Every structure is written in structure tokens, then in C-alpha cells.
Image (cartoon, rainbow, N blue to C red; front, side, top):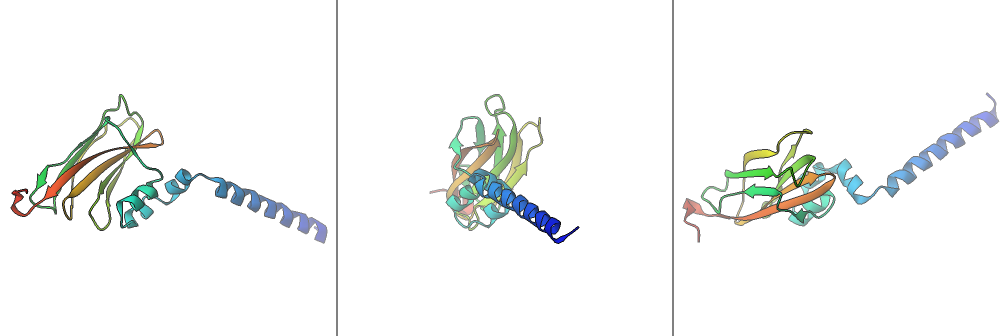
Length: 158
């Protein structure tokens, strides 16, 4: 291989890198979020930052059935339940649980296997009274439901 052939290989390699970088820069924000989440979302310190890290603002949808207590007497273990009506929201791939008033709002992420019925029960820590959110990814779009939960000492609510 002479000097000229080596130069062509280098130019070819350079052109390949330029094409690769151009494609990466052209990716929409949703695709970039898919690459970085949930790490970025878990590190977010505000609800809007966590939602932005997920890639888009979720829209409210009646197919997301989110159950939380109206009043939680112990904010360290607040029971929640997320169900999805898969006749209106098929192909669910992820479920996110966010707690608005927590120092880091993203509390949990669940990967949902294809063909699985979405029914999740867990407990989350809720720092203080505020809204809790269940965000569901279905067919590449985000949908949500929210509920306010009051955290009181002794469960007297007021």
C-alpha cells in the first residue's frame, strides 16, 4: 500500500465518522432521552427536569389507573398501584413513578415485557404532601395519571 492508498483509507474513515456524527446530531430529543434515561431522570431534582429527562411531556390519559391513599400517615411507606387499560393503551414498555415534592422526584422505573398485563403495587417514600404521578410509555408516547396524597403525622389529615 503506498502513501496515496493510505490517504484514501483515512479520508474514507473520516467520511464515515462525519456521517455517523451527523446522524447522531440529527436525532430528535426523544431519541437522546432514550439513550440517557433513566440515569438522568433519577438525578433530576425537580419534577419538570425529571419529565424532560424522560423525553417529552406526558399527556393525561384515562387508560392509566393510578391509586394512592388520600392521606398517608407514614410518608416513608406510601402504597401505590398502577394499572393500565391495555385496550386503549397497548404495547406498554415502561412505567415510571414520580413524587413531586421529593428531592429526587423519580421514585421507580419498571420495564414491562411485551404481552405482559400492567399491574404494579409498591410503596414509595413521600417527603411531604404533594402530587404523585404514574407515567406510562405506550407505543413510544408518554401518558400519565396523577393524584394528590397528604402526608400527616398520625394520619389525621388537615
